[in-house]
Amino acid sequence: EIQLTMLPQQYPTFPQNVRPEESAFQFVHRYEPAESVSGDFFSLTPISDTEVGVFICDVTGHGVRAALVTAMIRALGEELKPLARDPGGFLRKLNFDLCSILKNTGSPMLTTGFYAVADCQNGRLRFANAGHPKPLLVRRSLGVVEPLANGSGRSQPALGLFEDPPYLTSELTLTPGDFLMLFTDGLFEVQGQNEELYSQERLMLDVKSFLTHPPGILFDELLGVIRAFALNGEFDDDVCLVGMDYLGLPAAKT
Image 1 (tube, rainbow, N blue to C red):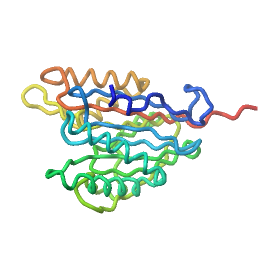
Image 2: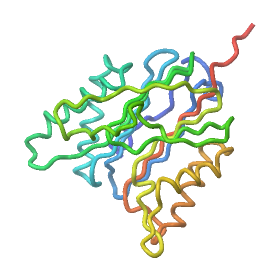
Image 3: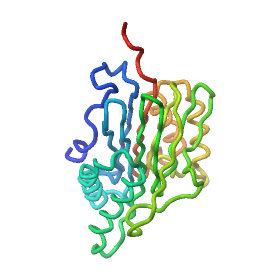
Image 4: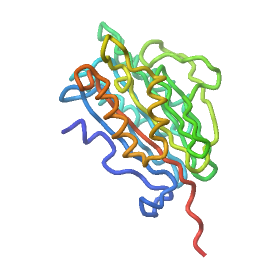
């Protein structure tokens, strides 16, 4: 119960004073711990009337030890609000703080993380990735699902491994109708019949088959497909899914 209260209790709207169905950004999530507590965490932080910060992370393992680290990450994230507009700087400082706290534990607590800042005024999306599975960008108008890769094309290290790695901020432009899907690796690291693994490539194909569905239904159908694939019909690891629908700013009232 305590861990669930650390997750967003309601979704922010953009602009702040509009009804949820009129918001330029609309959010959905699914959160399924493998045990009573989870090493997965996400946050949605309004930065201004048009900007939102979206963060997701996955601490190695699951259970109490991983859950305690997610609690620390949440607290550290609150202190990093001055860096909220700078994805690379945000992850760099979070990594430094995590290393400082965990260096005396005797064993590293590897944490993957992804942080993005989206502006509904111009569709600008800036993001940085610390060893996390690449989010999927669903371009509904084009019928395309593509992984969100770093601008350099190279992966960057997970949090908590090195004291001061550079984290590159990449950028692209969203168009109304685009859907950004963030997730932890528990979603696709699932074993099926004959030791076959549910791959990221298969995930992209399944997301594409549900491309026209509303985000909440897309997530539920996707989870159902993967459960049906799984040997025991369940996920072995924590699963967190976070979706951001970009609808564009509502038309100004005359």
